[in-house]
Amino acid sequence: SLSLSLSLIRMKAWEQCVDSCRDKDGGDFVESCIDQTKLLKDCMEENADYYGIMLQAEEESKAAANEVNEAKEATGEPLKEGGND
Image (cartoon, rainbow, N blue to C red; front, side):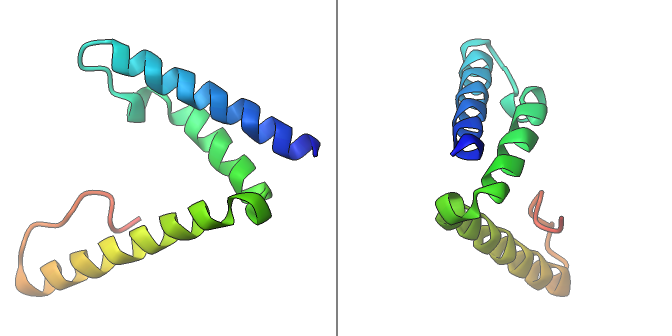
């Protein structure tokens, strides 16, 4: 489908951005590739029937990080970054 083809193009653009950042010393692909990441995630969500396993794994990872952070909050330990989105 056209939507799936678009997501594959966006995946390639994201991969190229990440590779380009990794080639640079100290390149931060998370910051530098934020636009490509957002576009890719949107396409993945639009094609959840194809990318469902990856999207589910991401949600499970977020939930696990939130559980760890909640436990740490209860004990006063420092929180893991990115866990409480």
